[in-house]
Image (tube, rainbow, N blue to C red):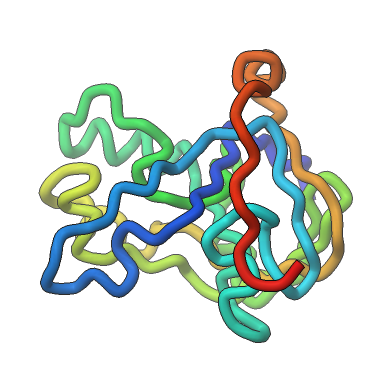
Length: 175
């Protein structure tokens, strides 16, 4: 497999949309970080899905910057932040759907692609009207983490110095 370019890494301490049907979303930011700690079977340390459920299918999520660029053009959205889809790992140059039901490795960390990270109606609000429909079949990838390790952004090494002053997020769940 060609090395995966990691353009952005995000974590969030809370859910803005999950469990919010019929009411306003919360305002937990997706925080861009230079690296994330992947914990096998548990998730990303500091993220809202860490220890969310036993054997959870979405311990980590991936999204394609190429798809976001297409979406921005199709919906004429300017300055569409890669944080808006609320996926953890934003990549470039890989078809994430090819990784469904596959074991794969990124920067020495092993994963199992479980399913498409299907877009929901909140995408129309978070990004722009029409985003949910545009992203059907291209919403990203949900995966289980099979081995411990750290992922680092390969596209923005200068980001580490710029945001290293952020306070650590509280841990969710165990440990």
